[in-house]
Amino acid sequence: MIDMVEQYFKGVLAGYLGANFTSGPITEWQIDVIKENISHYCEATIDHSQFSYQEKEEQKRHMKQSLEVYIQGVKDEMRGMGRMK
Image (tube, rainbow, N blue to C red):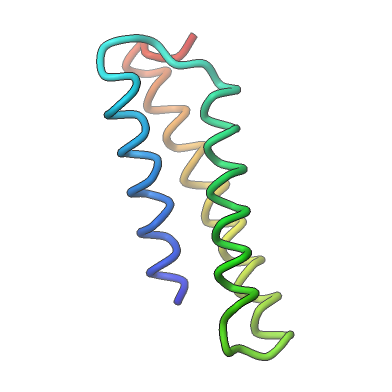
């Protein structure tokens, strides 16, 4: 389940950035909005799974940690490429 969720948020972010910010800069708040939307979707997906309450909480915790690390990496990469406002 976690691998599927991680692939989802990586795909959503890559698609959003590729479709909307191909040549222009992006702001940190825009990436944060994307992150929050991805997090809400992934939490809802986990909530509707067949896992126990404890397993769901663990899945959410892991997803949030993974998402945070991934988003920080995206921000660092954008800054390095000069695409972050």
